[in-house]
Image (cartoon, rainbow, N blue to C red; front, top):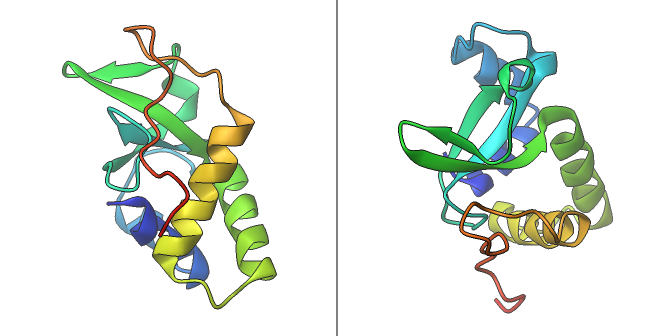
Length: 124
């Protein structure tokens, strides 16, 4: 799943139903979204249980995952973006969300010492 797909679930009020269908094995209150290897529009998103996480970044099977946001915060930010302009496409909302995320957490680091790789420069 990509960020624009997640945005589509939030916009369509189908996120909870989608998560229930995923049979996560933990309460929705503990849903945390992570991006594979870097923060990017093209990065795959996985869902993890925030209660079971002990360190950032998270490494699973040798693959690094960087926290995007916990579910509640992600939904709040996306709803705020949609309230300001509901005519944006899911991809444009995703771009705005990544700008917000990058501004809110500019110092998050990945193991090699580089800042999160943010691959959208603000241009369409």
